[in-house]
Length: 205
Image (tube, rainbow, N blue to C red):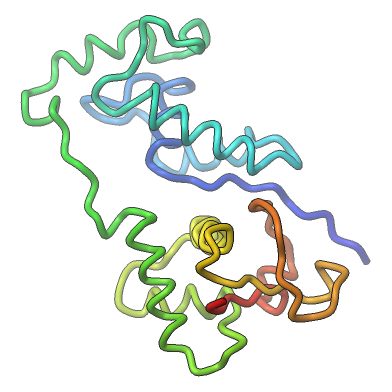
């Protein structure tokens, strides 16, 4: 029986901020929606088969336009549909100075740090075929918080695009012999075969 892959969002801080502001209102001085509510909303919004483009667009919009402390609200193309507009700038202006200036995210919470952890784990792996994705996630979470599956997959595929890691997919999902190296952009899909961990392995190139 064939299974239709499910398109899923890659959820990060920028995406959370954009979706919260557009659909729930200002996120300062306190968020009005719980993280789970925003994640569930993101899962409903991501267009089927276009997860990569949608995730990249929302993340970039949050990083460049709908920023944490200096959003470009006056000429924002979403302002007519944004529940935070026009209250967002006033809400930010009312924050105490320390909150207004904001603090940079901890390095340990960034994807750059996670990329380094993935590469370090792969260097420690004796098997040249690397690790199944779920096993990699388990090992990464042994000493720190569990890594979200969609985030880990996006990080692994970014390493593949940069030539720093090899992502091998089994013949049952790629239509090619096991051991073939996947090419192209991240698909951002999840299905039963991926959850079982037998179809994706990550290793050093």
